[in-house]
Image 1 (spheres, rainbow, N blue to C red):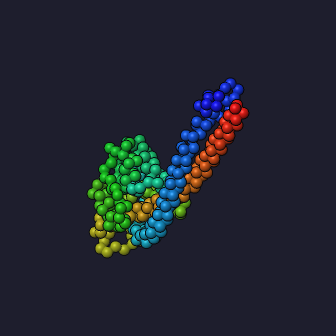
Image 2 (tube, rainbow, N blue to C red; image 1 turned 135 degrees about the horizontal axis):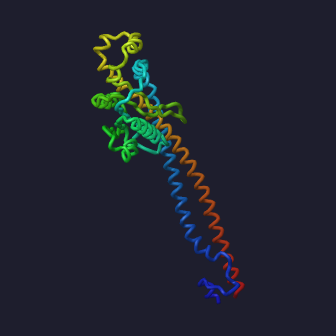
Image 3 (tube, rainbow, N blue to C red; image 1 turned 120 degrees about the vertical axis):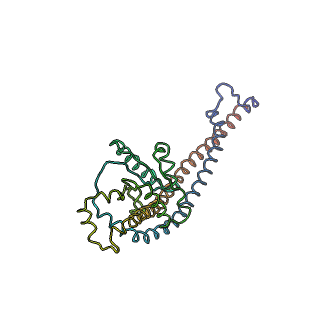
Amino acid sequence: MFSRLASGLRPSGLRPIGLNEQTRNAATLKTLSIRMRAIKNMQKITKAMKMVATAKFKKDMRTMENGLPFAQPVLNLFQRLPVEEKAGPITYVAVTSDKGLCGGVNAQVAKQVRLGLGAEEAKGNTAKIMVVGGKGVSTLKRLYGDRFSTTFEECSKVPFTFAAASLIAERIALSKPARCKVVSNQFKSMVSYDTIARHTFTVDEATTMDRGEWTKAMDVYSFEPSIYEVWQDLHEFYYGCVIYGSFIQSTTTETAQRMNAMENASKNAGEMYGKVELQFNRARQAKITTELCEIISGASAV
């Protein structure tokens, strides 16, 4: 009879509760142990990534604070021009990052571009897309690959400078867009940001603008030589300032959101580890109880 008990066969009425649990618990304990180890490793990685993002954020914040005063005066100058909603082709410039794990910063930019494309194409206007950053390319390429004109990837491998922004601005100027909107993230604080579609004045818009409105906006400044002589170079410089300002703000936003995302991931991993650890302890206790029941049942049968 003892051999029958040891082989898992029980006489009628002597089968203890939890026999099937014994078989399951052996596998469950091993599975839970592996899962706990994986969660702990994940938590270590996310904590390390948060520390890296924290160090990088200070550098990006300093770059933004030093770079925006350089670009903002030119942006303020062109913001004095009146915005006129006209029909015609439009170019969207999406400023995204090359890396992920930073919350929804890239998804928000892609969403704004998709909504803008849908609205413009519903009006019968053709639209093109220029993308800065690998994440924007991978997000928009599947549905809007035929609208792509130029992409700029791996911009974050080296520190972004105004020279790099000038190269992108040169491509925009060479495409001669009739209308242009730069979609990017505007940094507000460590926990908040705005995704904006900045109307960027093109050469075509400036040359077809009402002269009275043009004079009202530009005559408050003195240009040497005259505005008409330096206008082309000034406009390309304006494109560069828009791209540079948008990129450094987007980079700062990306780093801040990555810090928050990694902190939340570490917190969630800790909570998940606690739940799995509780399951592990319950399964181990159930296994011990089952073995005790089997021993007592075996002894009673003998």
